Length: 138
Picture 1: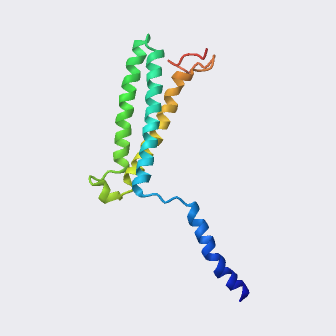
Picture 2: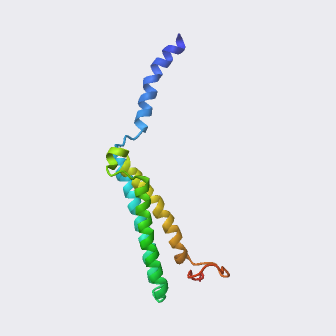
Picture 3: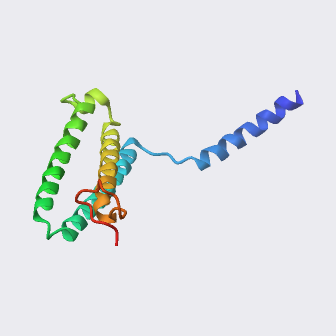
């Protein structure tokens, strides 16, 4: 009985403490946060892409091929997103979380593309015979 009284006294205090540490977020806030994260990833990718264009500007054939690859990647990214969420009315089909989910998928794809592009910025090790157009590190 004594334990039950203690539990009844402590329960409201524990609930109040737990409630003060949690951050209430609306779906709109979660959507905005996910899309802002994607925008940052996209900006980082574009910065990397511009660095490559600048560093390799003398290699016109490479630049031409890189631009074609980037256009193809954008087409792939957009088609992949449509395959993930094919319904015409996305809100009706996938709910209010869909903008968050789409931005998360876009961010994931963009971070991966940036990692791939960074090879041309970072360079390859001396002796890497499969580096192709990637310049050797200085």
